[in-house]
Image (cartoon, rainbow, N blue to C red):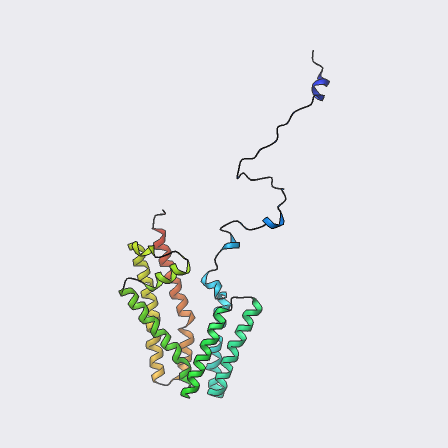
Amino acid sequence: MNDPRHQQDAPTTRLPRIDAPGAPGPADAPVPPGDRTPPAGTEGDRTPTLLEQMGGVPGIIASSVPVAVFVVVNLIAGLGPALWAALGAGALVLVWRLARRDPIQPAISGLLGVGIAALVARQTGEARGFYLPGLLTSAFFALAAIVSMIARWPLAGVIWNGINSRGMEWRQNRALLRAYTLATGILAVVFVSRVIVQGLLYDANAETWLGIARLAMGYPLLAVAILATVLIVRRAEGGVPRS
């Protein structure tokens, strides 16, 4: 008969565990410091959205500060102080972005735009000259949007796919082409309305109302157009079969 104690004390042979390639290791396995990189598709390698590149909602609001400062100071103290106040406000926005470690390119572009507007206003000697570069910019984008729709290269599609590095294959899909054309039409309406309303106020030399219209028809109106563009495009892309 076999002795139970002999069975209990008998040595056992354990085969080493061999994990399949790609199988997850133990949960408590130490991770070397050099290998602590986020996996692909996580926040570590995620491309910032356009809103994030602009500094989010606070960054968009801050971009409107120089124009608001110009409107108020010009109403109180005149053109000269208003120009210096707008330039100072633009510089403060840049410093604020640096302190927050936000992308500074929008602030630099905004400060450059304020500088050009201030130069035009100083050369013309009129406060309405401060709004002339923005008015011409809106006219340019309105014309570009209309021409792009006629040429079947809708501007919204070019910008959207350019930002996301998707190429231009979307033009071969009729549903996407129609969606981007509709989105471009909405953007064209925004820019054309700016040209009409602000152009009439410019001709009437209504500088205060021109500044108010510039603020009201700036980022708020553009944000509505961009939101409509995103909804239209995502709905169209949802109906496209995945390859």
